Structure formats: C-alpha cells, structure tokens
Length: 405
Ligand SMILES: *Cc1c(COP(=O)(O)O)cnc(C)c1O
Image 1 (cartoon, rainbow, N blue to C red):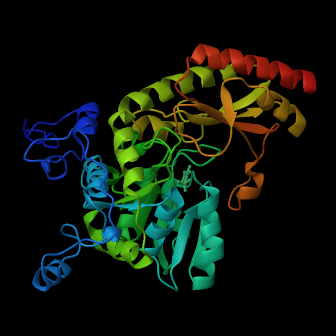
Image 2: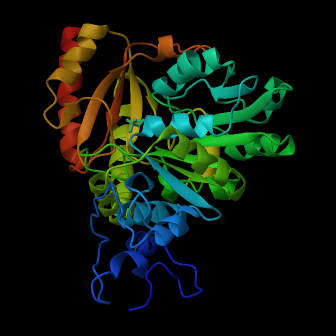
Image 3: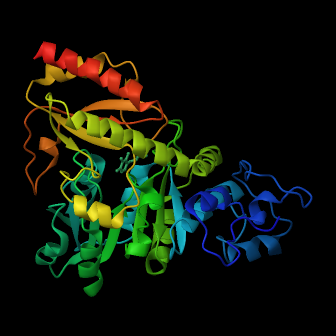
C-alpha cells in the first residue's frame, strides 16, 4: 500500500481524507518496514543522542525529528499533520492541552502591547475573560462587535486594530457570521483573522480556504468525540505559521501522547459522527419548533436563525449543538424540564457521543449587543442516541416544565 495521506493526484472525499490523515509511513512504519494502522503512543521526555556532535546537529533544527519531549513525538506529529491536511492551504498545526490554551496562544501570537483586538460579542465566555483579565493589563484593548456586523465591521477598525476574532456560530446563541465579508475587510487592511471553528470543524467549514489566517479547534469536543480527553489545536496559514510556532514553544505548551492518540482515533470517525449529530440535531430542533412551550429555536440550519443565509452559503452542514428559548417560565420550571431527562446528561462541554442539556443565561455575557428572550434558555448537544428517544424524553420534560409553570 502506498502512502494513504496522498490522493494520487485526485481530489478525495472527506471520509477518505479522515481515514488517511496523518497516517504517513513516517509514523506507522517503524517496526521492521511493516506498518501499524494507527500511529502508536510514543511517550518521551528525554531523547538520547549517540554523540555530542549529533546532539548539536539536532539543535540546529529542533522541529525536525525527535529532540525533546516538549517538541512532541511521532504520536503528536501525526495528529498535527492530520489536522493540517483537513485545512487546504494550511502551513501547519500546533497542539494545546485545551481549547482555551489554543484560543489564548493564537491571540498572543498575533497581538502586542498597544494593539487593539476586535472580538465577536458571542464569543465563548473564557475567550472574553482572557481579553479582560490578561490582554487588557498587557495594554491590548478589546472592542466587542455584533456577530451580524458583516462588512460593517470596517467602521470599527482603527489605526491600532491588529486582529479580528470570529466564532461562528456564536457560543450559546448561534448567530452565524458573514466570514467572507469580514475576511475581505481584514485582508484589505492587513489585519489578521482568527476563527474559533469548534462547532463546525474543518469538515463543515474549511476556514483557511475562506481566507481565515488562524483556525482554532477545541479538539476536546468533536475531534476527540468521546468526552474522555482535553485538547486544542490551531492551524495556521503560511504567513502566521512561524509566529504561532514560536509563541507556542515560548509558552511551553505540549500535549500528552495518550491524549493525542485519542484525538487521532476520534478523527477517523469524525465524518460519520458529525453527520449523525447534525441529522439528529436538526430533527430535534424542528420538533421543538412545533411546540407551544418553545418560543424560539436557535439553530443555524433553521431559517429563523440570525445569519442563516451565510450558513447556507458557507457551511457544508450542521453539527449537533443548538439552543432553545422557552415561552416564559422561571429558572425552577427550566430545572424541572432538565432534571428529569433520561437521555441527556447535565454538564459542560459537548461533542461526545452522548446528549447533554445545559441551562444558559447569555444576558450577562454580551456587551456590544443585548440578549432579550421570552423566557429561560437551554442548550442541547444531540448525541448518537436515536432522535425519537430524545424527542420523547424532551416531550416529557416540556410536560414537567408546563406543570411547574
Ligand atoms: C469548549 C470550547 C472551547 C474551549 O475548549 P476546552 O478544551 O474546554 O478548553 C473553546 N471554544 C469553544 C467554542 C468551545 O465550545
């Protein structure tokens, strides 16, 4: 068999790419010329050299081959390479011990004191907190913008604007941004764009192909896919790659080879899982829309979602995470809905094989826009259970909510 990461000059489908990604013979053929299907776990801190001369030679390019555990082993390299292969046009990928570490390091690789950052108002809460607690004291100002700004973002750009951070759809509220319009404005002025692409992954939204400079994933979610490891990644366009790598090494980030292995394993089934999460999620969302207890369903694939036209134009499909707003009622009624669910766990994170329900309160997390709602809201992650069972479970939950209200 030849190298499964090569397409033989022919464009290959997403499933085929996921099966071959990162499985270069460099990582799989280390045992007597024969191949292991999945690049195995190589654990290491110290790397031993045969001589002082060899040690010095390796030091001339510590990124080329085994050097020291912090620089990774073939286990982490195979995952990074696989993620790079999923983003046409990418120069490389760095790995992080969490999605938050990926977000913060990507930002630090771009910004310096005196710069201004434009941050989407619907950003993941720890991303907002980083701007407030770490960037501000460093002398880097953040201006939050409406996720629906589109080309209008040009009006917010000042002399010191160095970067625009996007997250689409937005955390909790799922507004879809006009990524090409914002990228066009940024590119015309030499401003760097960063996108938190955790919801869609490169499979549903090829960020770098749309002109984004740094594509960020909380691999903890869909890449790992089984709720059993924390991991993040940033994939960079050529112009941003060296700064990203330098900043990452300077901050001392490295990831466990065991976690990298789990992420590589998750990647093989990412395509089929996303398809099932997406179909199940849309079935549940459409059913919720028909219910009188539900005021609004916040799902990018529904025409009522702010930014839906951009979703249809730019995304290849939906994943399984969305929210809904109840038609009145209080916190206790919402808790009555969630507490008795049989097939939904209550907890943070998402992207695993299992369904989750979470009470959400976006009002306190917005500063450039205002969150107004008819009642309390719930975020759902739709797992790989049968949608009919999830719908029956939610129907019983809405009965409890109605009884409590
Ligand atoms: C969960 C999440 C993160 C952070 O990932 P962790 O691995 O939990 O640190 C970043 N961005 C988004 C959109 C997320 O949902």
